[in-house]
Length: 293
Image 1: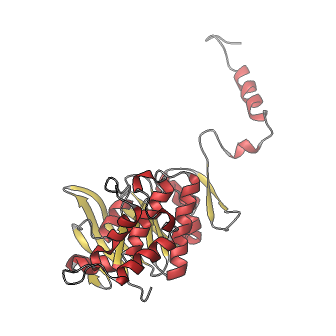
Image 2: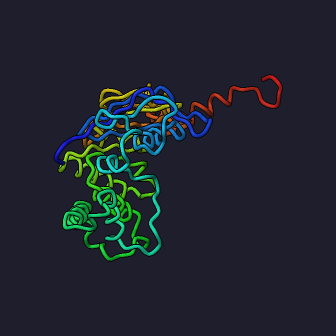
Image 3: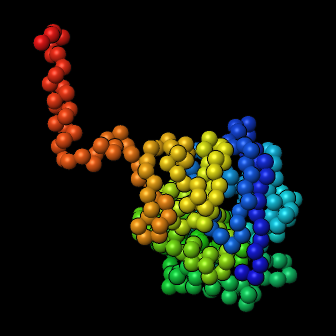
């Protein structure tokens, strides 16, 4: 990209009608980096992303795009700098891939300037970057989940924005397609320096792919920073209510979460059968039938 635009928020209070969802949110998105918002269901992750994208007006506080209140910035200006891919978008019935991607150019259309060579080039480059050129004439509703998500990302890229926001882009995808989409986001960041902000559910994936994490719990931000600096067993307990151990990812060295469930504990490292034998011994010493031995 030719320039990096800035995105930050200060003192946000977010609500749907009278239902407050999040409060006291202040974030500064690192330009040219990948930021991932993590947290349990209903913690306010997607709500924060919607506010950053100007899809939800804060009850209090301000979102700044290039230092200017995004609520007071003309819609076309916002759309030329910031792209948003919502959760589970729906394509019009029967639309072809190339036509859907071309819709990303709408913010650049004016009454005196219709489709141009620049638009054609932007669409071609977006499809090339997302490996969707060979799908150009296919109906979107005939594609696999991974292919569809690549097409939606291509549409967002065709918009030509420096900042790209994605709400749970790997939802409903199998593991292979999840990795495919996340690798694509890294490619886009590394090749063009795009600022990417995504909401993800998988903490291990967030740690592996993100430069910067924002951890949320109960409508508040509880930690921000590089994964290696903020992801601890205590943070996972606070955010996800899960006991765990943090180990190094064997491939990347980034934090990897090993959950400790009710049936898994450090005692599980004992030889097979030892725990069961101890339990049987313990039970054999208990009085049976309500009497005494």
